[in-house]
Image (tube, rainbow, N blue to C red):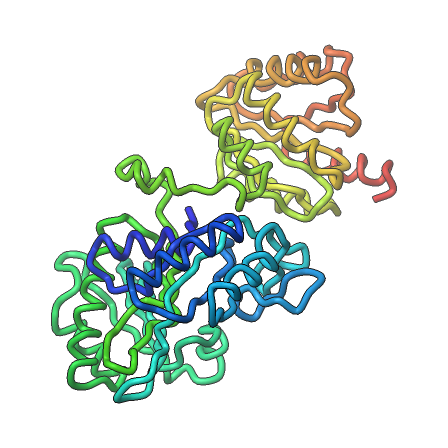
Length: 407
């Protein structure tokens, strides 16, 4: 589960990670109010107004219809009002949002941390994530903070520092020092970075996160180390242990169909194809998408209804798939192991009648317990539903349907 920058920073702060302080607002008036409050708390005279959306590249992104960027420096409270007014309620397009962009509903008013001092500020990159190849967490760091790390990795891979963490013992002090040394730090800045890395790793591990990405990590002009940004991805499967983190979910940032599917205990991911698919089991769903492509179509979605498919889940699946205007046909592929095929077939017929006339052809492939009985129920229903038992039959029917539609 992704969360906003301001929420991610609140998680970091809880574990003692130094952050760029800020307050969130959802109106220009509120932005002015929190800017004044922030000035009292930190003494800052300038402010950074940051769009809060679940996408990177906000500083380079632009608000649709204007030259306003998603992150901007305000040198006065009135600038805060003007910039917030230009951002809130508007659509921000970045390289990660796609051309459709994302609507900005909140802004973070943050303190200015690039103040003058005895040394020059310096930006670094730091992230923690799971390395599935090595079955352990890895700390990634670079002196090239503030840039797209993918570009750094491609052009100058030698500037990417990696430190793998043994899951049996966790992060060791020497490893935090090793990363700080590799970043070229010394003196107070070195000590601060060691503390920063140690606290960051603790926050990552204890919050059951999938990824922390801090870009940039800033060494201020007086050698403090702090998180200027925070991209936090929480492990959905561990949220039951962290109800306070689960409450941070912002469904406005998610695909409405995926939100609806989640509410019905369905696993759904929208794709760009023309054949909707409804399957029980993730592995079978992947095979079904391959089947659709081999038949000349393109999968319109990934939809796993789970092992307990019934009339309610099938109906919910139908309704979600049919909200995609690109869907020209639907393939239901069920293996009757936990659930009997005749029950699934009855559920398909019941769901079809509950929805009413479904405007696209439906192919139902049932295999497993009572598959023949399931096929009989489908064939005798009188509905515009085609049954199949073998994968070959389903593939042939998909090809036939697409040909009839001229796809």
